[in-house]
Length: 162
Image (cartoon, rainbow, N blue to C red; front, side, top):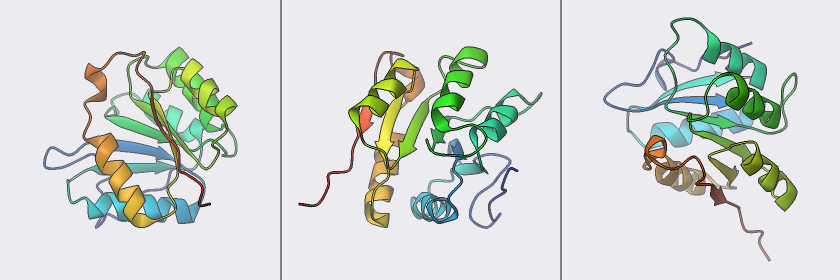
């Protein structure tokens, strides 16, 4: 079931003040909360729609008359349809150009390479702090992904503390 964020925090109908409309597929409520807080902290007028799995997000993309997001973030481990399956379906049945990032705690090379082969715009490991997440979102959202080559692949992996 699609989760509509608090209207004080985000505008589920779309972005305001030239902000971007962001779709996030994530089933972990703590991760959703952190993502919303980090995004709201940017004070850029971005809109956010949150979905509990890839199927819900894909259904929203295919809905007649729906506003297309500017960027999509997909968690990998979700029920019903995981992030990699959703990415495959987006590329196969919806859009080859829509910027789609896998956003996960998994950092193994095989998963990163699988995301690249399936057509992801990039792979982002979930930061461990609010400041790091805000910085990551600032960097990713500042780039005009639609003007870049579909062969570009952005990777951000969280370095483990040693």
